[in-house]
Length: 503
Image (tube, rainbow, N blue to C red; front, side):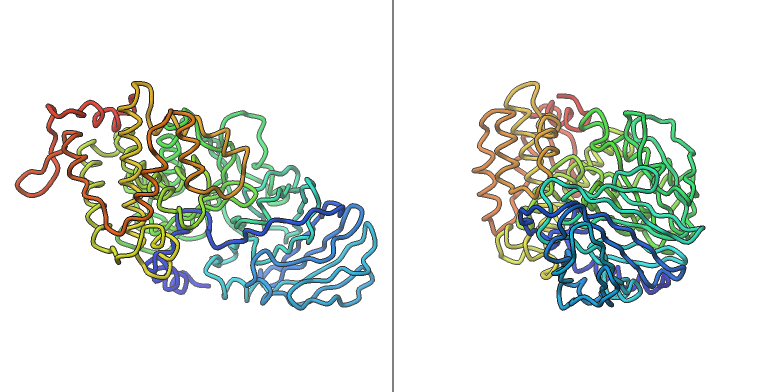
């Protein structure tokens, strides 16, 4: 697929306001796997040089499951055929039946990658590289084995490689349960692959051999690292500029935790031609590991990329749990709030500019309200296009949380509760309810009426007026309607602490 075709597809897609553009796709599979005695599945995946056909071989430890099933229903359209251990055709109407496959047996199936990449908004081609979600070609055992991670190996043409967030070693990747529930970004083909540190200013220039594509995935260093999968295409900032951009964004987000939220990250950089802003689009995926896709305009200069909010926004998502679709306004609000706050803390914009950006966002959010509740808007915004209200009303909610926490006790803040909630949500890699997140915050910080505030906001049909809170924070409007500082206000110290990172 050419750049022009891809851009033509993605821009209308953005305008529809699919909220998963900045979070893991909420419409992905949520099925709870059955419990059974089937053994672990081991996949071997091969693609042809044209990246048009994928052939998978799946072998089982012990008993085979009853079937292989698609992770998402759309993937059924891309299955060409399936074969049993003796080469016999297997029934494959909606699922691949494994009746009669003996213990320790292997089966094969074939996927039309060309059709999958053309028929899905979650895939793109860039010269000899294919970026595609595993949900379009990875079929899962049903029922799934209990506590048995799957493995996968890729057999690729000699000059091809693979990049994914899945942990692995010597070309063998490990797939936990989330890799069969949520989308993961997988890049296959010819592209540049580099590794950088997300924990300090020194970045590694390590190049990964195409014959060992997972070598950059496992590191002995305890610091956070990112693989950069840079697809073909011109970006004015150049390779070093792109690396600096990602490093600076990661360093800004590390200010919440004191370190980057995850130890391993895949960042897929996709040049898409010239545009009016540095980054056109960002997308977080969490299936089997953390990945971020960023669509970058070719005329973006280094300083423009470093000053842009998109990478920071996506990285902040990794500091909080994946919330269900109707509660997306909370996770998107936190990410949008911090995209402004963290840029001020990193001296990428002034504190006053950050407050003005928040205020302008609130105005944009208010303009697109449809009279529905915020919960309804979040659930349906990919259809209604009211994503600005969802993002920015969620941002106002995040600001309210931060102010309540900072006025509750001197050592409290939204930073602190997000940081202390980290172990809880990372030990529960499932989709959370908004009430669960706020309950966890209150257990950390003490009762602050968060769940009552949540219900009030979720059921509300009108965008809140930010001016009363602004005035308490010492943010008043000048003759032009722009915010200015009033240092005599009750909570002026809280206003300044938010943008400086002080507790």
